[in-house]
Image (cartoon, rainbow, N blue to C red; front, side, top):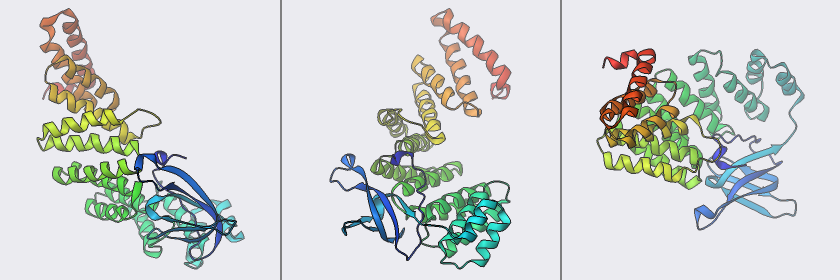
Length: 342
């Protein structure tokens, strides 16, 4: 299991009880880049988001892992017959009734709330979806699914145009440290960027970059560098923006699966470098690459428009550029005619 592929750590644990299970965690090392993932299995004696995890192995030894080093925790425990019936039904009403009737400290009840939070993402009103997440966080302030609840709640609040609420939720998510802090900082930066608060955006992207480097999450690192570079461009800090974009390509080995944010960040970086290079062949190449990564939205059209303009500017250098300019104009007329009027 790679930490770089874990966006949310899913943890199932009956708070306060001793259960068989284990923990996947970063083995401490003086040099962060030399850290290794390792596992401790046995009896989970303690677990909490605000503390850490303590596992007693089968030989009687104890492993204590601080919260910042925990990657995943799991348990091996039978669910109650009543809850198994609810799971088999898959019925929203059955889950709600179970949550209503079960005791708050029942681990099956907490898992039922988790299922309701997941169900709420499809087909529920935003207000109802937000409410079930808020219920979970109120009843389980140190719960097993805290990271998931915060991430989904903040996303729902952003969809509901409640940016201040979303920022507050991401602020709480930052307290979970590690990968969760990196993700929360990045998403907060996005909200600030979309709201035109470029100083705040750049600050949060810088925090996300630092945390992503610590936990070695390439996706988040690439995303933070790309979006952070865009914020710097908006602040007219061109040299710093260029450094961000160039660092992105130095850090990004393009191994594994990239997230949507990571792919968009590549496009932002190429577009940003194109914006800084003027009407040059180098800029044309950057816009060409950016149009690929930004495909499917208006930014792709903006890149193709700049490619057309550069080709027109370079048409005196040969027929190749004149032909490209003509073909690109036809593409613009067919797909983004409104951009030709600007």
